[in-house]
Amino acid sequence: MVEDRKAILARRNRRTAIAAFSGVAGMVGVSFAAVPLYDLFCRVTGFNGTPMIGGAAAPGAGEQVMTIRFNANTQPNLPWRFEPAAPSLRLRVGEEGVAFYNAVSTGEGPSTGISTYNVTPEVVGKYFHKTACFCFEEQTLTAGQRVDMPLAFWIDPAIAQDPNTRDIRTITVSYTFFRSLADAERSGALANAGAHVGRRNTSTP
Image (cartoon, one colour):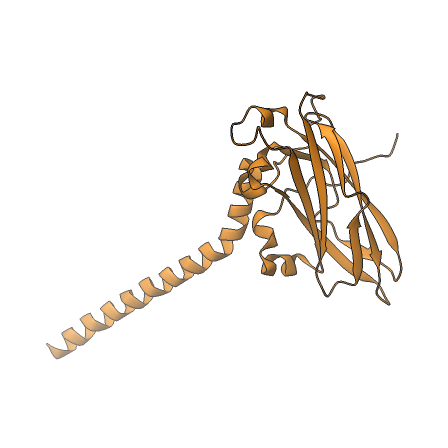
């Protein structure tokens, strides 16, 4: 009788341990999946200021004129001077805009950076379409080296029809360079980073 009770208790303990381990494993799995799943959701819906996925061509200039401001940030331990070539530009919705950012290495040797970006106000994210940029691509600069980094984009004319965005006339595009994507994730920047579309191919056949 005593041995039967011990056997029953042993089985219960094993089941409890397995259930607890499975719960912890599930929680860990969810925590690791949370960032990429949230990021994908933002890219598809434009939620939280994340520009929409897609490199579709601009449809053509509409009537509403927008002011696009450009912001630049650099992780403190990355020895670069990073800034927009021009602080802002004005363009019509549906018209493609092209802007440049400049980066100069101030370090004594080679250094590598990688950027994320976002737009504000957050509600305009689904109307901001980026067709070429330098985000999520590692850039390695030698001491004193300078590079120009282009950004091509357009604003969906539907922004003028949405009651939540039709009165907005200014959009800010922000890029931040980190030493690595791991640093960007630790800072929280990846949670609402915009989608990667890559550089525009300017070569001719």
